[in-house]
Image (tube, rainbow, N blue to C red):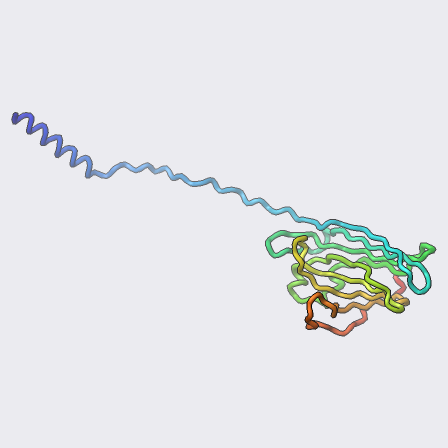
Length: 196
């Protein structure tokens, strides 16, 4: 029995020593493989072309507007990291005999004096749309704003072309809100030609 007791004690002490010893740790580190960051593709707003017959000064003119993305212009940013090509918009007013009364390709640079710094840096030229005839003038609505189609952020401007081809630009005082803040007097652009 003593032999049995000795063996039992030796096993108990041996087990205690082994259980208190430090276990070998595996040096393998398990981590997720980093995913490569996908570079976002520069987006373009859809282009459009529009031709509208307009009765003006006793004759019918055609107002032609076309918008297309221009990769040579600085990129616009929608504020969430998405980059967009800015647009150039060609506006022409053509007489009935197909002679050109006025023609110019506009970029956002033509309107930077009428928008604040954040719109200068991060916006795009969204559109130029014929609005109405007002006396001897053709009136167009211009918008500069976020290139994101889901956004409604923009600065409305008014572009006026006189019957002499003089162009003036101003902030639109008839906003969708009741605010008249930001109204600025109309200023004539440096351009004063017949547009041809």
